[in-house]
View 1 (tube, rainbow, N blue to C red):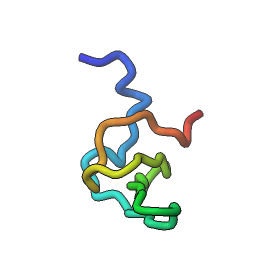
View 2: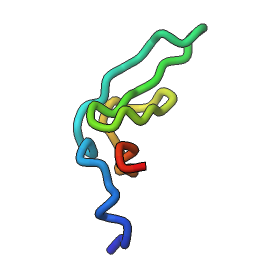
View 3: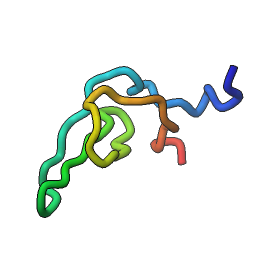
View 4: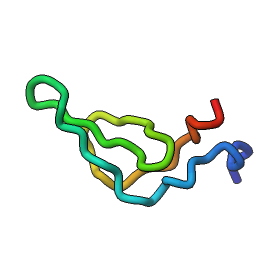
Length: 54
């Protein structure tokens, strides 16, 4: 069991928002809860820290 569960974002497992505003062919997925951003990949949000608490 992870010790940092209290810091996990509740957006985990939700569908993220795609952001295609980057130049070129790059695009990002944004967490709908804490707004963390990933380059490419799936739109399903992976477990991550809740950046609203930082």
